[in-house]
Image 1: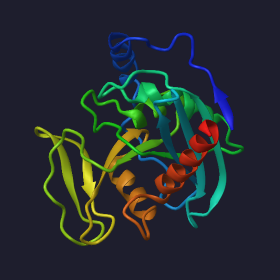
Image 2 (image 1 turned 90 degrees about the vertical axis):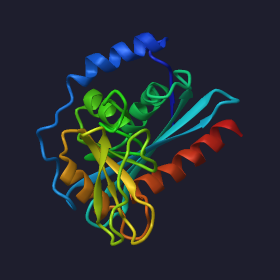
Image 3 (image 1 turned 135 degrees about the vertical axis):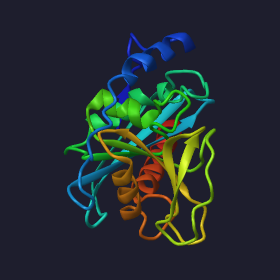
Image 4 (image 1 turned 30 degrees about the horizontal axis):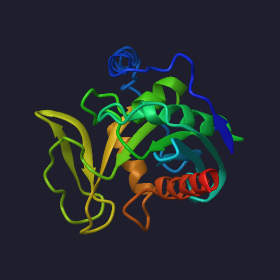
Length: 229
């Protein structure tokens, strides 16, 4: 487990954080398809908080994209680096997530975030932020649609409907299990939306949420318990 310090130049105010988003958003790459489904590695990242102890734990779990078996994992723990502000949650998580990714013994490949990329009020959620900072292909797979609207996808697994901000498609609602509530997929960096949805389906052979998210969630919760017990 890696212990993380908050960077000395980390934004301290909402105004500072929004200025960083504005600067980094211009670097998001939207014209690359991303890695082919079922090849190389795919990595899930997730975080868990203990606000009472001012602690955040991050986990990165690398899976073989073909078999979905775990091939590497790492955790990092640090202080919560930013107050809770809707739309700026990435600033609470990025330092520890970066440290967990840096601690991996092999390249992560595609990174899947439990959250948003372009499906964000400022079009720059955690997946986009992380992708720009690392240069890695990233996608967001969220449990809820945030502030956006969508029509319920058809019942069969694999059905989709646009996730909309007015007339703008910022992601897709994707049915990963028949007749079960969809997940909400958005592009982070260097991956197309079609490919992001295809990867998400490949990562959900049994459950609603991707195996990357399920395993990273379990690992970061365990790391948080160890750090605060």
